[in-house]
Amino acid sequence: MNSTDTIVALATGQGISAIAVIRLSGTYAIAITNKVFKGKDLEKEATHTLHFGTIRDGERIIDEVLVSIFKAPHSFTSENSTEISCHGSPVIVREIIKVLLKNGARLAEPGEFTKRAFLNGRMDLVQAEAVGDLIHAETDTARQVALNQMRGGYSKGLASLREELIHFASLVELELDFGEEDVEFAKRDDLRNLVIRIQQFIEPLISSFAQGNVIKNGIPTVIAGKPNSGKSTLLNALLNEERAIVSDIPGTTRDFIEDEMVLGGLSFRFIDTAGLRETEDVVESLGIERTHERMKKASLILYLYDLANTTLEEIEAQEKTFANLSSTILRVGNKLDKAKPEMVETLRKKDFIFISASSHQNIQALKDAIVAKVMLQEVKQGDAIVSSLRHYQSLVQTHEALDRVLQGLSSEVTGDLIAMDIRQALHYLGELSGAITTDDLLDNIFSKFCIGK
Image 1: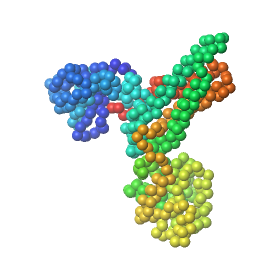
Image 2: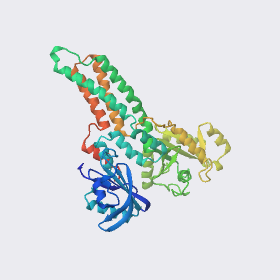
Image 3: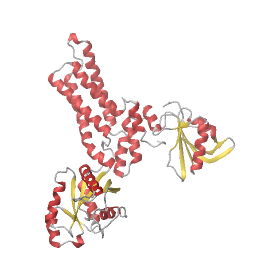
């Protein structure tokens, strides 16, 4: 990436809209925009001002627009930037971008605006990744987690602690230069207290990943049970649409059908699976095998029982299907309208939820039970929650390196060994914040962003 280039991209969604916004960033962003803008002289105007005029290709008017000016370093990227608000016709957008390219801009790469903000010190890597998470947030809870992280979240606290650790690392390294004189520049008790403080800061973040991962990626929820227990009907009832084919013929669902919905501020990925039974049908057997695999990976399993055509003994036998699974199980008795009252009373003592999927009876109660099973804490403004696997791994590795520092201090090992473990901890903290990066890491992170961000 050439940081001196001026980049351009559509910042709003593709397709027809009332308004579209085209962004430019780079040293010559204002100058290039000024070349094609007829109105005021943009290079003479103050930062953070808005100007009405026309975009032209020579004498040809392309559109009437509003241009926003952001002068370095007071912009998202810390570079000169402009935003052109035009009418949302794809033809107009294409023509404006073409004339900007002709006058010296180039098309932005995915995430390049945010990448420049990071490289220019506008934000650290944790905050930059949060921008992408905020754009892709599908629930209000995911939005709040991403917003907290983008506004500094835990990264500012870690940056401050890392600076303190760098100070101690330099003192320990200095001791090594005076090895024969037995001097101690870094007081071991102060170093121990700092390491403990960092670990105390990190530990809640590591613990929060289980919740953050669920908030960001949704909760995989498998609907399982015997053939004809009503799994596909239940999926349709939960989604309130005919998503899966429903049939009285056993074995209709031979592969999984998946769809998402939001319940209680969380995204659930419901997966309708092949009915569990013994069969000689090769295709159906493959579907059943996939069902077992999905059940092992699921966070939540809705296991359906056909109350109309199943005995208590058969229900007890089916319990063995998920006896060794670590997933949370919600037992659902279906076809309540056709069930024997005495069976319902017996099963009521076993934490069953009773529904009739075909008539939508008690579906809301089931949804409430699903949310209750997850039991996530409410996310408030300012809460520090880790939702990225990369961040989680860096924090765990940092904690382990700091454990080795404490062990070394307790064992009174030599300063060079302590310094080595401190350097490891600093490396992992640096990878987390972006103080230490590789091109491959940055490319992997920002390639997942949309072009205009």
